[in-house]
Image (cartoon, rainbow, N blue to C red):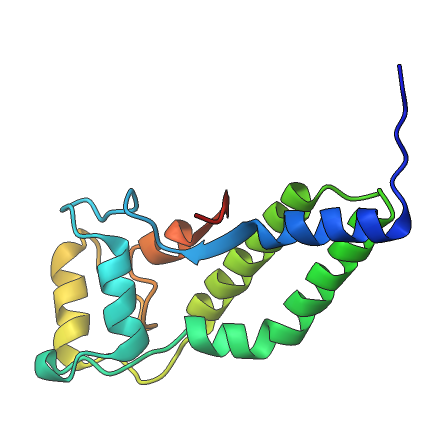
Amino acid sequence: MKVVRQGGTEKLRATLNDVGSKQIRVGFFPEAKYPDGTPVAYVAAIQEYGYPQGNIPARPFMRPTAEQKKAEWGRQIAGAVRGAIDGNVEITQAFEALGARSAGDIARTISRVTTPGLKKTTLEARQARKKTPGVSKKPLVDTGQMIQSVSHVVEDKT
């Protein structure tokens, strides 16, 4: 077996090419649907940005998470690149780890959203769907479907 060693510049270039050829996407993908067939991404977008025509206020969770975690995520990527240059880390695995972390961070933010509060009609609609008395008064967590649907993929850039 022949071992080929790359010099520092070649190794750096190869690592940066590997990093530059991949992307992490985090969010709600087409296969995530509510039982009635409604795409989770559709509901998530309405909640993230609001829908004034439907009297639904914005309850952002993706943008605030990205803003709050951007430095941490950046440090994780930088560490992965350093590890890849040293030969200790495989970029795809590092991107998978960051994607999973980012999805988890977004899910945690969803679980912490409390404002704006739910309207009386929303609470009544939640209760009407339940077989037992009492419903959650927290926004975004009625069925848990949105939190469970936050996911990630690592893919080659096209």
